Length: 90
Length: 374
Image 1 (cartoon, rainbow over the protein chains, first blue to last red):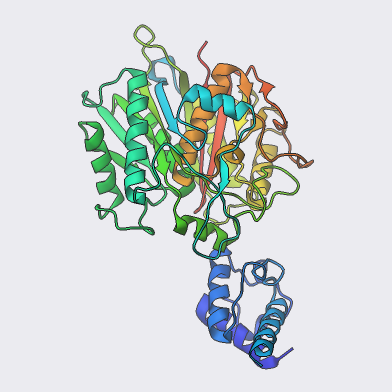
Image 2 (image 1 turned 180 degrees about the vertical axis):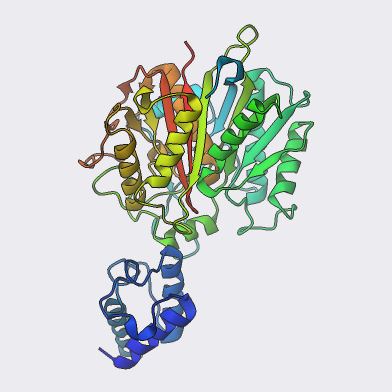
């Protein structure tokens, strides 16, 4: 798992989604809804922000509660999508 | 507590729905378990193309014209049924809608009030209308408001209800929020996974009860509301707000939970909604009564600002016809659901009192209690 993606995602969550948990206290497996406190509007925003920040397209099949349940799961998704895009353009 | 002197009665009602516009014909189709869901293309990324559309208002018109046309036509039919003249003195229109068509096109009016004003003038109402916008509870809140104004002596008769038209942006909203089902709407089913949208309009004519002079379709015995104060979209899944609304409506009606024989639930089909209603009904009816529960969003879709009023009419029809439609989409009832569910086929119901609950985005919880006429 790439550390730069993890920190970028934590920073995005705190700076752009106004959660009240400090960056360094967002655990890799903390529930983004149950612990970090995102609501359904927050998840819509998170999807779009991730697409812009990490230059990926998150389609309906990937926009699932499982993929967005924690920082770890979301970073895994972003990594997979970035690799997939790189493979296509190679 | 209402006394017979300040009882509010329903003297007319009408709806425009995906299954038609006739009260009787649509009721029969509900009893048969028919659904108005149909695949409808969408230009954007959307989770499910199923939606329930009303065929009686042409799709060639721009959304804001469909909205106004649907409202005016339904109001006129409700008034005709009640024998009321729209230009008659003291007739007040109370129109509920979620947010009109502002995300879709450029309506000629700059505000929902200006829109309501135009609808009122189109139907010939002599008094400035009131518009209510409380998301998915708008239709029910319009009815609650009408009852309160009549009881306060501030209005002599009200036409209350709601209207909303299906738009690409509303569908996109619910798909993006994750509230839309990727499969189908299955209220109170173990497999429930979201809602599907519909559109429509429904209006009820409310008047103070005067035994000698009119036949009531039903009495609106009580109304109550509460707000969850929990989140912008998600309900308070402990059911506390929903329970408060129901308790207030029962207190308003001078009734106990055990007096309620039938419930038209919100039944939007999302897991959070199911959990909320499950908890609220369990807590309210734990010791007292087991009303039969039905829900009509599987037939007609979730029509947002109209749904509370459509479901009030469905409840009145259930009380009058002594029958309850099956919940469309319900095949594996949630074993944790605390009350009997109307499943697979229409069921008889001899309830004298019924309750309809509506839960809106933003935590708007509204409960209406109706009594069947003798």
